[in-house]
Image (cartoon, rainbow, N blue to C red; front, side):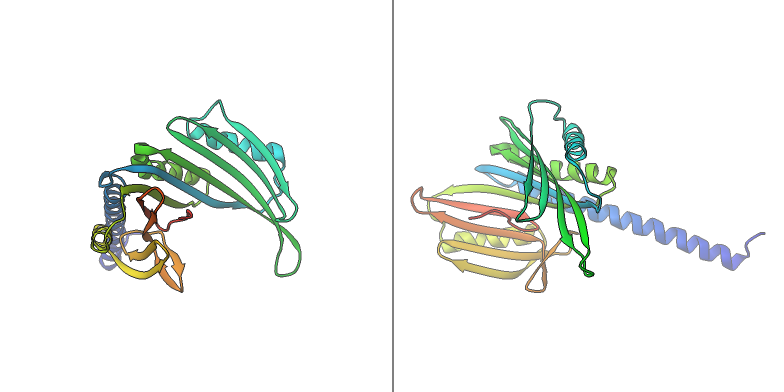
Amino acid sequence: MNMNRKTKIYVLVLIWAAILLQLFINSSIDREKRMVEQVMSEDISNLTEGTVKAYAYFGDETLNETVREGMAQKLAKELGITSGYRIENKVDDKAKSEITTLSKHGEQADTLIKIISLHAKDRYEQESVEDYVMVEINLKGSNGTAAYTYKKKLADIYEALGMNANTNIYLLSQEKGQLLDEEIEDYIDRFLEETNATEIDRTEFDNVICIYGYSRDIDEFVYLNNKRVNVNIAFSYDSKEDITYIHRAVPFVDKSF
């Protein structure tokens, strides 16, 4: 049956809307990529380390050791790890969990893959299982500049396996001596400006200053006091070493200071 003129126009409007939406999504992804790459790597000197983490819910099946080990090895292979790794299986009765860990230590990076099965009870008090897949890559020294590249690679690997990964990028750099208040504020202002973020929360204790912000240009976020945050910069001073450590993260710093 032929479409009438009104129907054709409606269909064309829908098609163009879909195209424009996709262009907007691609533009947003490119903008986030350029921004995060610049702020989280290119503009940082004295880089000490960079860490990329990804985790996702996998399913609710009981996975035995053989299956968990196979999954860990498959993930390792996707990351280019085919030998020199170590696999450990652990049952934690207190946490009611079964964990298979694959670890590989290298000169440029350390990789950790965990397949986790958590045993719990649902709202009907019935036994249930939740499986999670976690990957952590610790890039040493200046190799940390590749953090965003690995974030994208992990996201693609998880997606290919049918999982939607939550990711986190963390970079640690250092400056000799204790930064002055105006120097710290300058770091904060530049970080928020470059990420197009607004400061949401600030915490200060001992020799630590921690600022959380929110940027509409970055999709991922977490909640802090019921507010969205997805960029984080913090400063900690070690008086014994006389070094100020600068912590940057998207969406949040998950390391101890």
